[in-house]
Image (cartoon, rainbow, N blue to C red; front, side, top):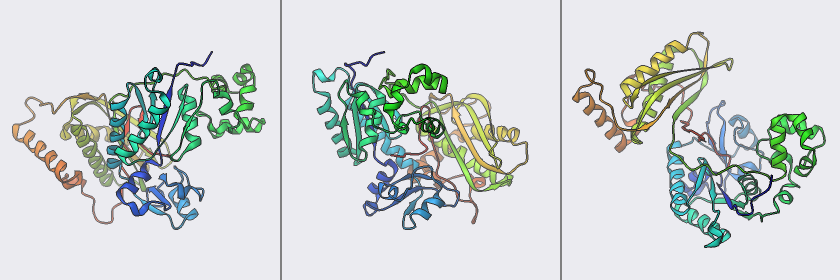
Length: 408
């Protein structure tokens, strides 16, 4: 297995993405310890500024602990609509300037520059593209340029924030050698513990272990880690594609068994992503509902439907699934809904069921929402009464591109 001297892969990673956008919206936040995420005791940190990280705070940390580590930190509830908008801006900039790229997440891109060295010089082109992203989006970005995706990603992590680095062909293994094993993608806490317990603390040591021994120790994953430790990675750039699913889920501040509250949440969530579906001119052919009980047992049920984007159908289907799914009468911790099998298309008229008045009504509702905001008009059952539980930020998920958080 050999490295390919002709490949040139750049990894672009937007620095502290959620935080950077909040600073764009409010320049007074720059340079301050900033936490983005749920503000309640059960909330978690979705992203944090580099100033906050100096206190030991990191993404996915309980917000309660983060506030204890840094009492002066500013907490902001996330705005996924804004984050998605800025992600699309950066995606369009990259898409307009390169022939092939992969969008790995909301704030992370792999760019294939193979062959461009003959015309522009990959180093110069990558620097200019980074400058263009900063100029046109206002968002800082770091990048690594190397012969494969693995090395470019690890390299980017070593120079963040606002950094750039190029690993020349043939230097991949030397670059990785002194780094801790935890820097290799795919090594979690459990695997790291197994390795460190056996004296394997650096990637150099890992690369020198016979591959047969790695397979005995960790199975197929051991072979994969040995290859990574030696800088080997032939994984291709997967061209950016439109999303194939859209979803949202919410963890409640307090576990609940209040069916009226749960039904209201289901209506709100279904209406929210139903509106997003129509904004993108998409139809869904499958609805999925997810429940997580207070004991952390998670159950999921789905139902195939005729392609539609009509709230009336989506709400009815979601409610039917929920009624069949919730059969244990235990407290509920999390509720989620997901639309899959997405296809391009507009509202599908159901013969004998819809009237022109009904269609005009829904089109008028969407028009009002687009003009005045999604929350400007909603069903009465979905109106949150005073003192009701606050919601966590909506978390949309694009197939293959999780948008749940950005460690940046």
